[in-house]
Amino acid sequence: MFGAGGVAPTFAGKGSNPNMGSGGQATGNIGGWDPSDPNFANLTGIILPQGIRDPYVYNYYLGIQHEIAPKLVLEANYVGTTAHKLFRAENSNRHPGSVLPSTACITDNFGRNWCGNGGFANNNYGTLRTWLNDVNSNYNALQVSVRKQASHGIMFNVDYTYSHAIDNGSTWHSGATSANGAAAGEGYTTDFTMPGLDRGNSIFDIRHRLVVNYVWDLPGRNLNGFLGAVLGGWSYSGIWSFQSGPHWEPYISTRARLSSGCDAVPFVAANCTNSGGDYNLDHGRNDRPNSTISGIVPSRTQWENGWGDISSIFSSPCLGCTSNLGRNSFVGPGLWESDMTLAKTFKFTERMNLKFEASGFNVFNRANFVLATAGGGAHNKITDSLFGEAGGTLGARLFQFGLKLSF
Image (tube, rainbow, N blue to C red; front, side, top):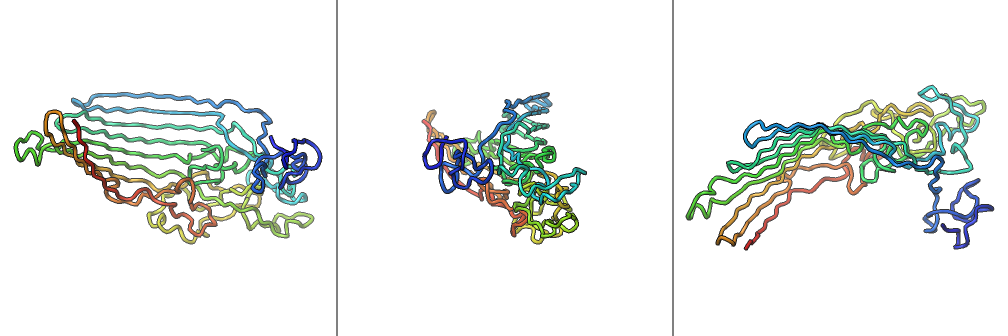
């Protein structure tokens, strides 16, 4: 624990830390980290009004196997996981309509009445970032595989998974490893008073995945002499992967911009407009917009160039309202990748062999788009001129050659 300027921490009196805010937040000199002073912070420390409990998880499984032909096995499994009381960071000092003037009261699209406070729910404090155990998740999958053991020079595995992952927050804060960043439900909740509004597809929800891998000893392995040296000992193997895309959502990241009509007394909601973000006016800025579409899979042209003019697709909800767009209701780019290897073993003696391999990765050089690279570069803010453009691609076609001497 640090005090400003290296002095002993104090809990009363005028605060001496930079950027400490006002009211109770400026009392004393205790802080965390601040850009202008690495010992201090703009955000308040974590507070635990109700304490923290350990999350817990249920796993369940049911599977069958059957040999449908000699050395050919069919397996089908149901796999499920349910987790409760997962951690997330939350800003608990807010409620819908709190940024309106104190003279203004509104009714949101759930029929609830709220009155403004000119900022936060409690203006003696700023952002109160708390840890809460309020995230639940659920994963269910059907996993089917067909496996052929090696016989007649060939073996293969075919694995297919149909799954669905649902939660109301996929990371503790800001979806740092996803394309969504601080989008509603991945940073703070859309509405602190109704966390269930963010229950939807997880950012890592991949609905379909098919993987085929195989090894084929090519004909000619029993040849002798010159033909055996040239044609014998070759094998062809590969892995083909296909999957549908992860889920993502459009969002806005600007504060509310209220018109002068919002200050009029008496307050008339029809004369008050918000030309910015923070649609439900709770001092957050990661809200989802209203949308005329949901659940579509964009074309490859849209992943390459963005969506262009989106003004007819997204709009602002009513004043102080939450949007009609569910969390992570859009599907990201899928994947198709083929890796192959052609190999031959040269036998010099009983103990000395030389193996040659020619391997190709993404052999067909398909552009496999990704929503973001290294946790950033996504274009899912509706104010982004490149909205909908992929953040990058996975690796292009690559060939490699190798020799391995065994003795």
